[in-house]
Image 1: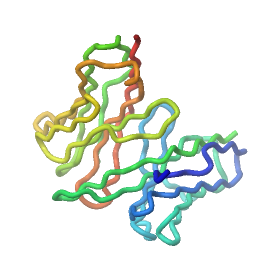
Image 2 (image 1 turned 90 degrees about the horizontal axis):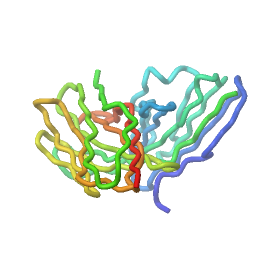
Image 3 (image 1 turned 45 degrees about the vertical axis):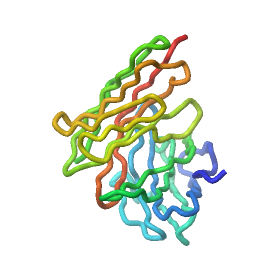
Length: 118
Length: 113
């Protein structure tokens, strides 16, 4: 399977605990995105990387959230001191460049990690 | 900022009915437009896209035309099947920079046999 993979698929944690999610993008893709999707809503952008550089962060990404992509391959998203409002599906996507002017990056999504904070 | 507004659901149709899901957007510049689909228990999949005005995206019998004058990208299918039951998301991305996706709230579609 050469798609985007995420681990774990489900995580249940108690409020105040730290959690870490992992995303493995499609191997030749150099852009990686994190989104958050709450029930009944569309995904919302959190942050993105080009290679190992984190180039943009949403204001949704509070200081309890941190993301890394140390070698420009897999990425991790850590949430410290989780709160019930953090319960959501966390989605990762990676992009491969398409032809065209300007070039369009088609994003391929992983299955997501569903976080439940009790 | 950029935003996408989708027709509220849920939408329930009979098999072979005609489908329209409305989508309008607000954006600066010239965004690319997308429809993504999320089948039960699966991740988001790109259904179709259009990158400039008057482009028509199509896939699996679905079509959408990029209408700059009405800032719309409505999804249509002439004859739906039970297997089309899913949640559909309209989205846009800037042509430059991060090209992050901005999604609508999604429309749940159920097709009855």
